[in-house]
Image (cartoon, rainbow, N blue to C red; front, side, top):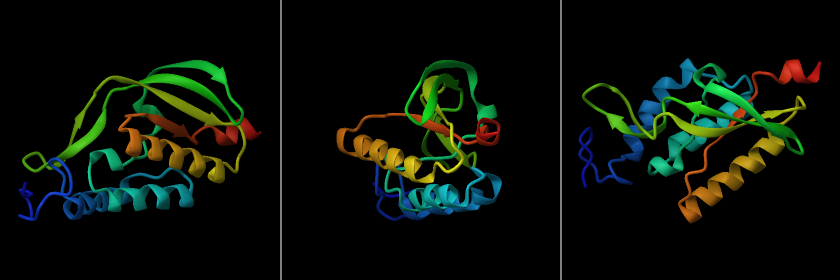
Length: 153
Protein backbone atom coordinates (compact mmCIF):
# COMPACT_ATOMS: atom_id res chain seq x y z
CA UNK A 1 0.00 0.00 0.00
CA UNK A 2 1.18 3.52 -0.77
CA UNK A 3 1.27 6.30 1.83
CA UNK A 4 -1.26 9.10 1.40
CA UNK A 5 1.19 11.86 2.32
CA UNK A 6 4.26 10.97 0.30
CA UNK A 7 3.12 8.31 -2.19
CA UNK A 8 5.89 5.95 -1.05
CA UNK A 9 5.31 2.29 -0.20
CA UNK A 10 4.25 1.92 3.46
CA UNK A 11 6.67 0.21 5.83
CA UNK A 12 3.80 -1.15 7.95
CA UNK A 13 0.02 -1.33 7.89
CA UNK A 14 -1.03 2.29 7.25
CA UNK A 15 2.46 3.34 8.42
CA UNK A 16 5.09 5.27 6.50
CA UNK A 17 8.38 5.38 8.41
CA UNK A 18 9.72 8.63 6.87
CA UNK A 19 6.43 10.49 7.32
CA UNK A 20 5.86 9.16 10.85
CA UNK A 21 9.42 10.12 11.78
CA UNK A 22 8.71 13.68 10.66
CA UNK A 23 5.56 13.86 12.80
CA UNK A 24 7.38 12.48 15.84
CA UNK A 25 10.26 14.90 15.34
CA UNK A 26 7.90 17.88 15.12
CA UNK A 27 6.63 16.95 18.60
CA UNK A 28 10.06 16.53 20.30
CA UNK A 29 9.99 20.06 21.82
CA UNK A 30 6.62 19.32 23.48
CA UNK A 31 7.72 16.57 25.88
CA UNK A 32 10.58 15.40 28.07
CA UNK A 33 11.07 12.60 30.56
CA UNK A 34 13.43 14.82 32.52
CA UNK A 35 16.36 12.57 31.56
CA UNK A 36 18.36 13.40 28.41
CA UNK A 37 19.44 9.78 27.82
CA UNK A 38 15.88 8.49 28.11
CA UNK A 39 14.62 11.22 25.77
CA UNK A 40 17.27 10.33 23.17
CA UNK A 41 16.40 6.63 23.40
CA UNK A 42 12.67 7.29 22.92
CA UNK A 43 13.36 9.68 20.05
CA UNK A 44 15.67 7.19 18.32
CA UNK A 45 13.01 4.47 18.53
CA UNK A 46 10.34 6.86 17.25
CA UNK A 47 12.43 7.99 14.29
CA UNK A 48 13.22 4.43 13.20
CA UNK A 49 9.79 2.83 13.78
CA UNK A 50 8.72 0.94 10.67
CA UNK A 51 5.21 0.24 12.01
CA UNK A 52 2.98 1.05 14.99
CA UNK A 53 4.22 -1.91 17.05
CA UNK A 54 7.81 -0.63 16.87
CA UNK A 55 7.29 2.72 18.57
CA UNK A 56 7.09 4.02 22.11
CA UNK A 57 6.27 7.39 23.59
CA UNK A 58 6.73 9.31 26.81
CA UNK A 59 3.46 9.74 28.67
CA UNK A 60 3.42 12.17 31.56
CA UNK A 61 1.96 11.05 34.87
CA UNK A 62 -0.99 13.43 34.66
CA UNK A 63 -2.31 11.54 31.60
CA UNK A 64 -3.22 8.49 33.73
CA UNK A 65 -6.35 7.87 35.78
CA UNK A 66 -7.25 5.57 38.67
CA UNK A 67 -3.68 4.83 39.70
CA UNK A 68 -3.51 1.93 42.17
CA UNK A 69 -0.52 0.44 43.97
CA UNK A 70 0.02 -3.26 43.12
CA UNK A 71 3.34 -4.44 44.58
CA UNK A 72 6.97 -3.73 45.36
CA UNK A 73 9.51 -5.11 42.86
CA UNK A 74 13.30 -5.36 42.96
CA UNK A 75 14.04 -1.84 41.72
CA UNK A 76 10.60 -0.29 41.62
CA UNK A 77 7.06 -0.06 42.90
CA UNK A 78 4.44 -1.34 40.49
CA UNK A 79 1.08 0.34 39.92
CA UNK A 80 -1.78 -0.09 37.52
CA UNK A 81 -3.67 2.75 35.91
CA UNK A 82 -6.00 3.59 33.07
CA UNK A 83 -4.42 5.29 30.08
CA UNK A 84 -7.25 7.18 28.35
CA UNK A 85 -5.38 8.09 25.15
CA UNK A 86 -4.32 4.63 23.99
CA UNK A 87 -1.64 3.54 21.56
CA UNK A 88 -0.52 5.34 18.44
CA UNK A 89 -2.01 3.63 15.40
CA UNK A 90 -1.19 5.94 12.48
CA UNK A 91 -1.02 9.59 11.45
CA UNK A 92 -4.44 11.10 10.75
CA UNK A 93 -3.74 13.36 7.76
CA UNK A 94 -7.13 15.05 7.85
CA UNK A 95 -6.93 16.06 11.54
CA UNK A 96 -3.11 16.41 11.66
CA UNK A 97 -2.65 14.27 14.77
CA UNK A 98 -2.01 10.66 15.78
CA UNK A 99 -4.96 8.33 15.47
CA UNK A 100 -5.04 6.02 18.49
CA UNK A 101 -6.54 2.70 19.50
CA UNK A 102 -7.10 0.76 22.74
CA UNK A 103 -8.32 3.86 24.55
CA UNK A 104 -8.96 3.55 28.29
CA UNK A 105 -6.75 0.49 28.64
CA UNK A 106 -5.11 -0.67 31.85
CA UNK A 107 -1.34 -0.31 31.90
CA UNK A 108 1.44 -1.11 34.35
CA UNK A 109 3.37 1.81 35.82
CA UNK A 110 6.77 1.51 37.42
CA UNK A 111 8.19 4.00 39.89
CA UNK A 112 11.91 3.47 40.34
CA UNK A 113 13.22 3.92 43.87
CA UNK A 114 16.71 5.15 43.02
CA UNK A 115 17.81 8.21 41.13
CA UNK A 116 20.06 6.59 38.49
CA UNK A 117 17.72 4.20 36.73
CA UNK A 118 18.93 4.64 33.18
CA UNK A 119 20.66 1.26 32.85
CA UNK A 120 17.81 -0.72 34.43
CA UNK A 121 15.30 1.22 32.34
CA UNK A 122 17.10 0.54 29.06
CA UNK A 123 17.41 -3.16 29.89
CA UNK A 124 13.72 -3.42 30.69
CA UNK A 125 12.62 -1.38 27.67
CA UNK A 126 14.80 -3.57 25.43
CA UNK A 127 13.27 -6.72 26.93
CA UNK A 128 9.71 -5.41 26.52
CA UNK A 129 10.44 -4.24 22.98
CA UNK A 130 12.04 -7.59 22.13
CA UNK A 131 9.03 -9.51 23.45
CA UNK A 132 6.62 -7.18 21.71
CA UNK A 133 8.46 -7.52 18.39
CA UNK A 134 9.08 -11.25 18.48
CA UNK A 135 5.84 -12.46 20.04
CA UNK A 136 3.63 -9.60 18.83
CA UNK A 137 2.57 -8.94 22.40
CA UNK A 138 1.22 -5.53 23.20
CA UNK A 139 2.85 -5.09 26.57
CA UNK A 140 2.37 -1.62 27.91
CA UNK A 141 4.81 -0.67 30.60
CA UNK A 142 5.09 2.99 31.35
CA UNK A 143 8.07 4.20 33.35
CA UNK A 144 7.51 7.03 35.79
CA UNK A 145 10.37 9.33 36.65
CA UNK A 146 8.22 12.09 38.06
CA UNK A 147 8.62 10.95 41.66
CA UNK A 148 12.32 10.07 41.65
CA UNK A 149 13.30 13.15 43.65
CA UNK A 150 10.59 12.37 46.19
CA UNK A 151 11.70 8.73 46.48
CA UNK A 152 15.42 9.45 46.86
CA UNK A 153 15.02 12.13 49.54
